[in-house]
Each structure stands twice: as structure tokens, then as C-alpha cells.
Amino acid sequence: MIDVKNMTAEEREKLRKQLVAEELEEKKRIKEEREEYKRLAEETAVKAFDMLAKLSEELKKAKEQIFEDFATIIKLKEELYGVRDNQLSHTFTTEDGKSVVLGYRNTDSFDDTVHVGIEKVKGYIKSLASGEKKEDIERVLNLLLKKDKNGNLKANRVLELQKIAEQINDNNLLEGVKIIQESYKPMKTSTFIECYIRDKETGQRISIPLTMTGV
Image (cartoon, rainbow, N blue to C red):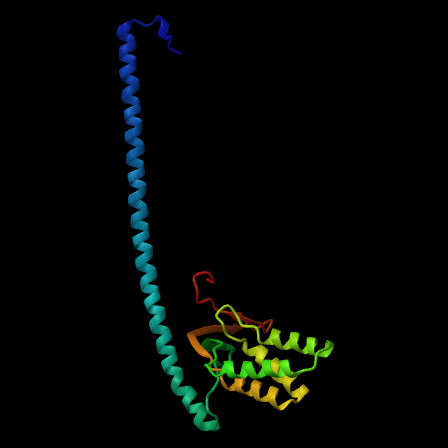
């Protein structure tokens, strides 16, 4: 270890300049390494983006082609079996257990006449005589009429509402529920394709991942 106390002024100045030079060299090294890191990160990100963008375009084209190909099959099925297609999804399975599932995802939606139906149901509740029975019916019906965050009724709750209305068998209530049901206009939000293969040993259906998180 150097003892600065025993150094001459000239030696101390020389040491000071050496330390300054080393510090500057270290700062330069760090700067160059950081610039190299940024260059590598930029290069890697561009390469990954181009690869993913190409893959996304290929998936898009494959999806469009698959829907186009199966549109003919679905139409043929309608003609052969005499049934109009109202399905949201279709599953096609090969003899060796490979399956392709394609269809639409939708959200619950109702037209403006739903409010007329709701008011009729509420009118029925108001017509009931006060008492424990009225409170129970009111609580159940209001729960089934509860809307989601988008302001829509839930389709599965409307089905429960129908069952209760049929049990009560009141004309005004039945009419209100019927109006609500007829106002149901589900909206298609997106299309999807899923792919499966059946394990020959276990018979279990295994999903073929089509997303980046699934592979």
C-alpha cells in the first residue's frame, strides 16, 4: 500500500493524475458497455418483433383460410341434415382423434324492448300483497334482473327467471319475461379456433397450444 504521507509533492500529483485517468477510463468503459447493451437490446427487440409480426400474419391467414374452408362444410351439413346453423361453435374430429373447434364468442346483449319487460316484471312485484311471500319473490326476481357492469342482463339469469315465472303462472309476469327473452340479441365479439388430439393410451383430449403462453 502506498503511504501518501511519505510521497513528494511531485509524486502525489503524478498519483492524482493517474487516479483521475483511471476514473475517466472506468467511466468510458461503463459508457461503452451500456451503449453496447442498448445496441444489443435494440437489435434483439427488432429481430423478435419482425419474427412475431410475421408469425401473427401467418396465424391470421391460417385462421381466415380455415374458416373459409369449413364454411363450405358447415353449409353442406345444413343441406344434408336439413337444419339451419345457429351454433356458436362447431367441432370436427378425424378418425384418429384429431379435433378442430371453431366458432364465435359472444356477449349478452338486449334491445330496447327489454326495459318494457323489466317494468312488467316489476309491476307484478308491486301488485303482490305485502308479506313474507312478497319479500321472498321480490328478492329473487330483483336478483335475476340485476345487470352486469355493461348494463346488460345475464342470459342464464333470464332462463332462471322464466322457470320461476312458469311456476308462479301469472299472465303479467309471464308476458314480461317473454318480452325480455325476445329482446335478447347476443353480439358476436370474436372468432376462435381450438385444436386437440386424443392420447392413444389414456384417451384424454390434449389441447394443441395456439397462443404464445400455451406453447
